[in-house]
Image (cartoon, rainbow, N blue to C red; front, side, top):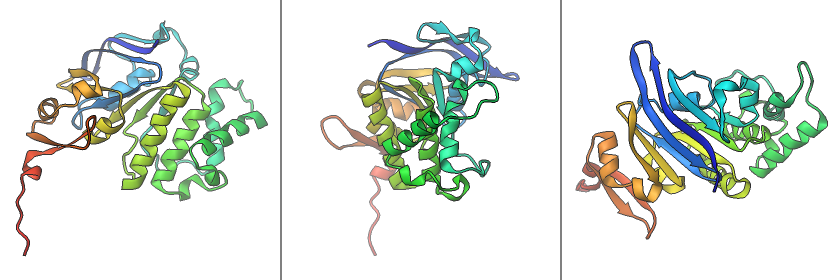
Length: 267
């Protein structure tokens, strides 16, 4: 399986604060890689470095063996798409118009999207069972529907690498699972490589193929989800004692031990 994205010895500082310290990993085609860490650990910073929204102090980001420091932002956008955290009310457009914005990197200066671009946008919405959203006002749909819209926009961008920044942030219980199920299906059906910053280790355990844990600006652990998602690693990552409940031979759910050991008495 080919390597689609590689991060080599990346360092990033904000003013005098070291945020990322010698970060190295790679993602293979068709794999879902989750990045875990406490709030402020640098997860979002890493995602933004991977498509050069932020410029690292040092290190390289390689996309299909190309160093993206030699690519224009438009060239990068033709290979890497981003699904950001939920937008506020900044798009006074129909959903279909937001989705078709994914074609922008492929349009000439001042060119308008053509019917073929709108066809791609409709196909992306339909692939997520969200075709009915197309005529709706983006500002008037739910948070979950907005995230589906932004995922459809990334699909319309037609890249083989997709970055997700806290994709389940602000979503209700059901939509968290629906969104990540859709993302996992994209990995399998289209061979898309996913890198997702996540705050919930259980979501990573359920959906990710590979996991990177960041602590104190550095990678604390990385590898396949089965190897990395242990109660010992998660305890170390979040500085709290963790236990688990076994769901089946392959899946576990993790909880703080003080929650698992509660013996509240009923009135």
